[in-house]
Length: 106
Image (cartoon, rainbow, N blue to C red; front, side):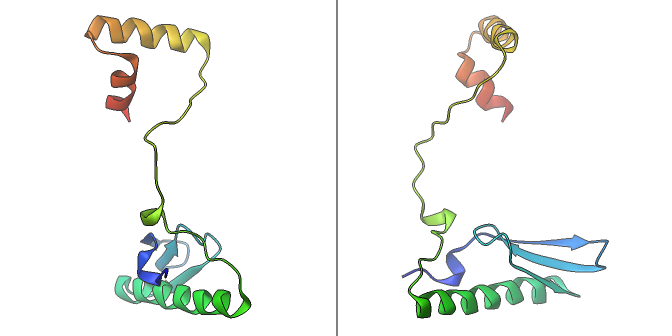
């Protein structure tokens, strides 16, 4: 069973609000604004707990937390041919694969 603690949270200072804003990546429409970081963090967790209860009551499915998702480690990236050429040359000059070069830049 998915718990509120399984989700990816972030708390940032908002100059516009003059307060801390707690958010959760899997529920982008949710936020909690508080005067201190701890309250924003625990406030957004409490809000997610409440939303998960509502979801369970209506029979909907909650988003799968990023921590519980599987990743292959691969993704396709389209770039202009000239950029591809530049990367190939730079990788060759450094005696590494294009993949190793790009990963080192990420």
